[in-house]
Length: 409
Ligand code: ATP
Ligand code: MG
Image (tube, rainbow, N blue to C red; front, side):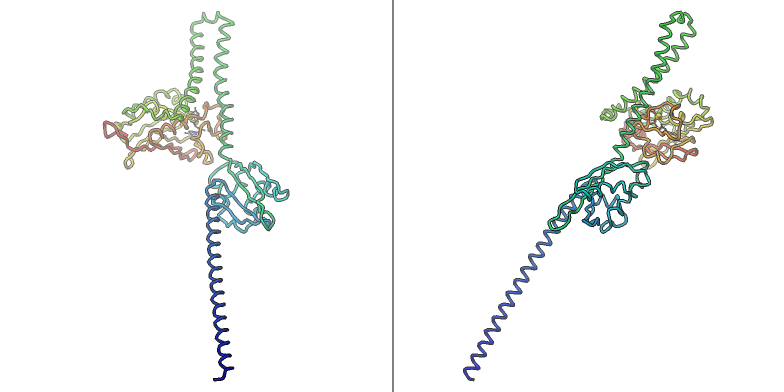
């Protein structure tokens, strides 16, 4: 082998070794790069999942739209409210559906300034999912602000908060103040009028029969004032937690029901109504605070009677055993409660305005909220079903409770 050949072979081997080393270096670098990329992606995914977790923890709907108005991100509350159609990739206007809801977003997009507004929508314009769960107008806080991007036009975040419940509560409170002042003012004015008449014409007092009649009327009106004030005090007592100090005793349900029917006898007669008691066992006892049970039964039976002044009303008080508990129901075949009002009747001060001539029917709308709270204080529950004009039923369920006698509920 010539020297040249040896040198050439050596040079080739050196070149091969160099190429192999370079290849190893490239492979190592590529591997390093892939590891870094994977680490970067993992870190990015962790940041995203932390961000999603945070945004999903908010009860408000939250959207992020890019500069073209296409939604890039939405939290769970937004998906629940604005779904079920996909949200990502669609425009803000498509997803919000109503121009009034989208207005703050458009203003923010045009001016770059943060924009917030309170928007009231009629039922049919509310987001579809909201329509499934609530009736009537809905009120929304819509808040839009720009999110600056490092290398692109800013994105815009939109926050949608449902203020309907607070708005409705406020409305109910306003109605109550008007209603309660009216309810109190009417009897007070009448009593005041009679007293003034007596003071101006004291000779009237000589007419014993006439005076007694007027005193009777005054007594009826002061009774009404007392009832309103007692209801207000009772509800604030139950709500302040005093219900935990229930005076528990065992008593016959039938006795309590009969007491109530006796108290309501004048109303039953005046309305020409019939009240039937159908207990599964006339010896069934309740273990609870008799004062509260009196309030519960009085309110339910009185409601059935007073909402239905037409003659021929039938009211039933029923009981049945179910599993380990007791079911009580007060049913009537009167005017009933429209489906749209049913979710609200147990709220304080709520009265069904549209379908009843509530100006003539006395009440403050506290009765059913007292009923509900008092039943809950006994670990029970109450629901209402109504087919107006056919059957309206308030159904109470009670778990079996401990007492000296095991038969008690
Ligand atoms: P209060 O009980 O404070 O004197 P109220 O009877 O108006 O006032 P709730 O007992 O809370 O208030 O009842 C709320 C509303 O529910 C009533 O105003 C009435 O419109 C409706 N309602 C309740 N029970 C019946 C019923 N059996 N039939 C028809 N409507 C009813
Ligand atoms: Mg009532």
